[in-house]
Amino acid sequence: MGDDLGDEWWEHQGKLDVSGSEEEVEQQKQSTEKTKAQPGKRKRITEKTVEVKKKKKNDQKEFIIPQNKETEDEKSTKPKKKRKKKTITDVLATSEPKPGSPADLQNLVALYFSDKRSVIEQEELKLQGSCFLSSNDLTHSLSSYLKQVCPKWAKVQKQHTEKSSVVLLIVCSSALRTIELIKQLTTFKGEAKAVKLFAKHIKIEEQVKLLQKGVTHIGVGTPARISALIEKEGLNLQALRYLILDWNWRDQKLRRMVDIPEVKLDLMKLLESGILNNCKKEKVKIGLF
Image (cartoon, rainbow, N blue to C red; front, side, top):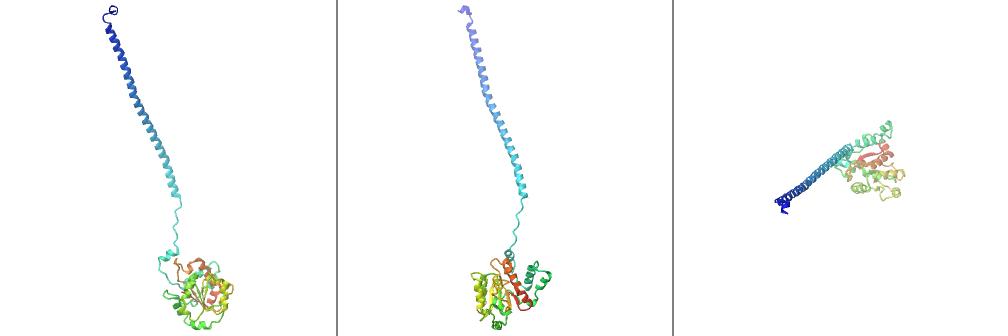
């Protein structure tokens, strides 16, 4: 065999083995290079996905911004909240109370009848200064005020003998105020009889009977019930000489009698029922307490 293959057969075999191993090494290198190249591809993919996500986020932001602008525009077009109007309580709480005057009542009457009477009729409703008693300057109690404006009260009450009528009529805003004023009359009225004229818990028929039963000198009540009694002829104004309006007193909300719409309306109806005409004839005088 040595002759057939030659003396150097083993050398050729070694070369074949070496060449075979080199090919294998090259294959292994190529495979390792491929495996190394694969992570690089993954990195490129992840970078692309990140860029895509960033673009999506930017697109979303660009889409959201106009919505915010629209809401701001809507806010700008919304009507502004109106400021609350000051109530009578707010105004009076920051100002000192002033005593009422005949001019205050004159202005109130003129304003009420401005759209209900002609110009000539409005002129006829104007009262002269002689129609008024002196007004309370906020220093008097009811008794001391009445003693001032009715100095001859003892004589006046003795001369009054008519039923269903009163000589002195005091008009206030509520039933509770009526009771309070009647208590304040103690030192003034003497032997005179005073009656409550309001609607709370008292039927009008009972009041009519009470006025017809005996002589009543003083009536104290609300304008609504007094007007109702006049309409039903349970109370007449023939003997009336003094009308006292509880003008300066204020309730818990600091409202005067004429600051309460329904009471003011009832008061105007009462004055219209014949009192203003009697004032012009100088039969009745008005005082603001």
